[in-house]
Length: 235
Image 1: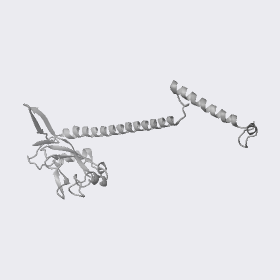
Image 2: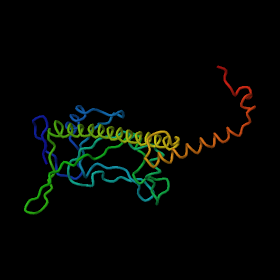
Image 3: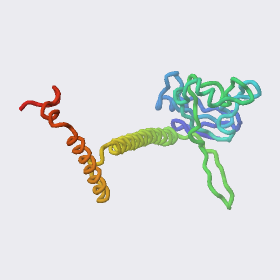
Image 4: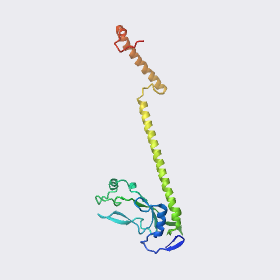
């Protein structure tokens, strides 16, 4: 297998435990930087070399990270905050066969790398699927990783927009519920009603007024002429 670097051709021996040429990784790190733990934000790894740690039979053990496919892979670092708290990590990923263990391995206190894309070319040749491992080229640094970065930023903005829209809808729903509740609590003579509702409302008001007049007529005249202090207003 061969790759190009600064105009020179590098030969990579065919071996399952390949590692990215240091010069190539250095160019990626120089271009895309280090995280707060001084590790590259992006890495190139061989699919049959890079490992991760998962729960085994009562112990944590290494497993291939990239499904063991014989090709180069672009990895991106994710901050530990992206995996929640240690408590939620062990609660959500508890290994039922090993109490206290997480099936995904120990909590990534320094973050972890996720596989973004394998560098393979897939096409149908003579009715069969052909999978070809791509060499390490500068197009990875100049085009592929920048496009991935752009996609990641777009995804963040889309998530922010989606969250804002959901919050707007939730606020609108809450406002509508409050408005409906207030409207239902108001007396019937607030707000428009149907003709039938108006007729019922008018009949109700008429009965109430008749009740008030009936009580008023039952009060002796001397009480009306001499109301208790505080129950009349001087002109």
